[in-house]
Image 1 (cartoon, helix red, strand yellow):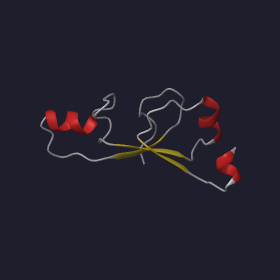
Image 2 (spheres, helix red, strand yellow):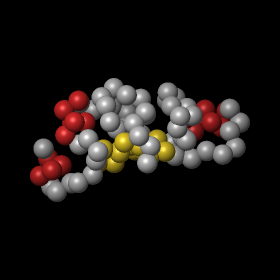
Image 3 (cartoon, helix red, strand yellow):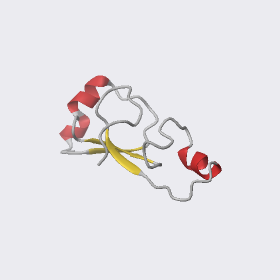
Amino acid sequence: DELQLHGCELVVLDRYACRLSPSFIQAWRGRLLNVYPSLLPSFRHSTSPIRDALQAGIRITGVTVHFIAEPDTDNDGPII
């Protein structure tokens, strides 16, 4: 694995838009993080959570950092 070859210890994604392979998720379990632009679970399934929060009149929002624990899950890994 190219990441391990270069000494990577942690993978941080910024609202990843692609599906990661189950083998990649398994190899990096516990060291694979995602930054999602809403306070989860709000707007969990949105493709534009910031826009949707503004349109909904939300006055307080932020980001959530969470683990990616399982393949094909939608921003529902354990929150840090």
